[in-house]
Image 1 (cartoon, rainbow, N blue to C red):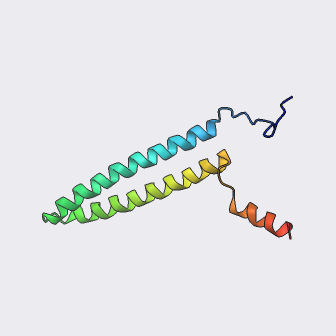
Image 2 (image 1 turned 180 degrees about the vertical axis):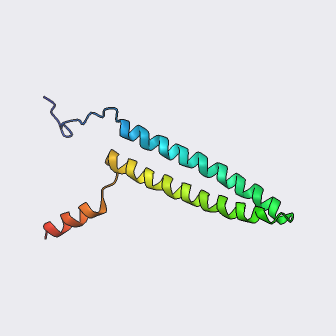
Image 3 (image 1 turned 60 degrees about the vertical axis):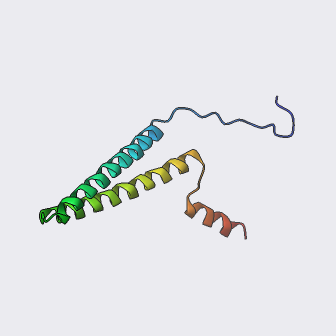
Length: 100
């Protein structure tokens, strides 16, 4: 049995397919975000040269880039929650109320 100041049960991390799926989702969102940002820059250049439909493509690419970045951040928050780095805010509120 372990002894000493910091002795205790060690949590052993095992492979989690759910974490792998979340990590792949974040990676896909970041790659899609980068592609859409480059596309928006290209459409913006074309639109300034006088091509009217490019303004719509610019708007769609910009909205898509925002959506991809937002989704990637949401997935990243889920990863940190599953790893135990952060907690669900609803759980901390319950703990504070019960501790009074």
